[in-house]
Image (tube, rainbow, N blue to C red):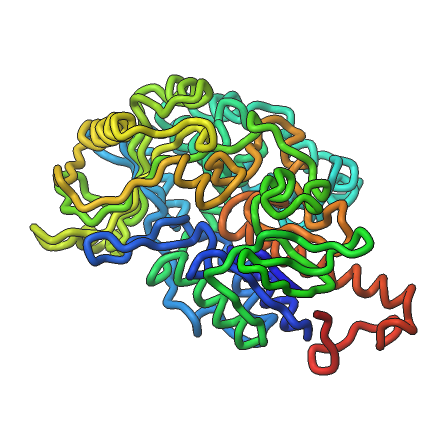
Length: 523
């Protein structure tokens, strides 16, 4: 089997398939594995340059357990006490905690007893939506219409199914819960976790708040360290990695995938191929003309958000940072209006990951330990932007304007960055270069409208033997969702192999039974 791309989906599918006894080769165009989970060197410091929020740890525990290992043996991981710190100005901040009762108390202190009660009701609804969708949708097979998913939920749970609120607007639903616009803005931001506009997303996305409330975990070395751990696990299972070389073409024989051709002209034969690239790379011919028909073309108008991202090694002062911090714009509606019009926001909401702030405030302890005065710390700063990196070049002047807008938001909330901090900047144009055919969209298809989730690419394509995985495919974007897509791709291949063995018992040893991890393999 050949896997194109060593992102989370490719890594998890590789490990799972190898654990089942298959011969697997992963081809990655970058020198390091991880896909979007990457790091860069700034001023001699390694700064995480990809996703920073890690939730749904149980997904990865499952992967490692299936390979006879434990996640904690490969990475140093612990649960964060503070989920995130939020600020609107320099008058104070609001923390959400791993302990929901502490979050409720903090919201009450911040916005009043009614707001605390509203949060309690919101949390209950988010939990209910998550429980309804977890097994049949998030961890289940791709459903191309609502009816199969409703059947999985079960006819006896119709009330629960309707409680998913797929036809309700997310922003409007939040206004039903929260009278305080700051809280509406805080919980509206969860739509951006899957690259979506909170003013256009369905209320179903409340479930994202519950995934975070179930636990945010901190990994020593960041998400890129998780990717490296998955590589070690996969190699232990026998997976071969070829890094620093791109796949130029998916090969077919008799209208079935037969392997891949590399950019250097080499070929890798395979009975099954998984593409861990964005499906747009297939539909636009980035992986060869033969693969164009494998998936549906997606209009650029349906792309998720992109981002302007600063990777810095900087001194900070003023605001008491924790690991995850959000500084909100004064006008959220205007911010997304500007993004929809193809412009970076003039007064953006800013996410800042202070990667060296890992000792969190607890009820009876001192604040999280900042770096000593005059000592720089590693930070990643994200501002949402339109996914137009394939059509809009970002000039130095525009980048400077965006940088000033980002700094203005931080200044307004009381955080000062050193003026000439060592820094690298990634624009939608840069993301397009790293992830071709996306325009810089970092999450695949945006979750706008009730049908969007059913329109995401599933594991199977129109070409037999060619499959998809990754954060741009079912079930959604994000680190755990990309891993779930890899599990689904591996599971789908296993089912297809079982079907082939039933119909071709003489051609493939083993008849109707699956070959064990010790006795057989499929290239």
